[in-house]
Image (cartoon, rainbow, N blue to C red):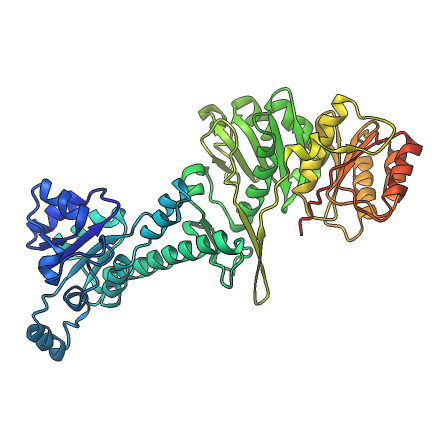
Length: 510
């Protein structure tokens, strides 16, 4: 039996090779892997002894050879293949352990195109694909986390067709992801990220209980192991819908750095947000905005969930809590609550992956774009358009309103007072309807919005929204501007003594 080992990630490879030797495998290896194995006492033979041809062109060609690929690919169940292998002097290779040149690590550390090109693996993917194709007879190993499992299978009669088939699928996923990464990089470098093909590759983090509905299957796929590294389940099981709401809630709460803030989401829409003196204060203020909608919602906590805050949250039914961190005492508060789900990022504050691109499924395909992000400079550099200037406290409220509006379904209008959201209208076909719906909800909840600040994620097309805001007692407004009727909007703000700011940046979210 013969095994070919050629890896960039050498984690565990020495122990793996020694185990294979003890099982009677002859080890063939290349370059740095061969050198390491020899140094560690493995009786490996170098690849050119098999290929009968030296590595050449600075290592660009070493395994692209019929003695390698013939040894991997010939069928052990066909007498004609077996006879031809003997005639050609091809020795079978029964196990291939390959992982590929570190292209991702290379593009992360350098912009040197020549170095990047040299870290595109050619022989590795070819061997992986050959071994995967012949999985009936050959074991293909591409992941260092599988090394122990392979040895266990060989030692304990578990080297079944199903076992090899699973490794085959993983191998093709590996090469597909690798080629996709290279293509996406080249398109980003030379075509602004929008080439003729676009590849979206994620790694499965976990299955969800089901999809949006019980008859649908669902799973979470992650970029760069974000959820593996930043998401821990403490209680319950995340559903498909939960993950969408958690993402929305965390995006809002994490937008304010280290400030003690809490966001509450229901069916992908914010129904509460506040920055407080502490997290308990923030949650209490956030809940006032719409306690009816908050029932059964998702709460994101930009800090540690402690016992006192847990007891306050436990006063109503909240389905999901996602916190930067969670105290053991806080967790015990929910011990007898079967329906609540609690997750943590195990960090000081909530963190985001800051994905560079965004996409959405449409019937027959998907639309793809650069991710939207609200820059702090949009608020600090916003242009005063009115005669009246906002106070420092109003500017703080405008920042909150503007960031929440940017992360809420259009058309959207957000009202904030004393660092807490007091009203929100979202997902409306008319911006004036969104403004009025928010005010009506605030009135029904008995919230006084006099003196509050207001934000819209896009321009107000008519002054009627400004007139309605003034009647409700709004004192400051921030919006992108850009309407053909901007002068009417500015005039209305001045008539009512409202401070008005234009940012020049629209944040539609559809």
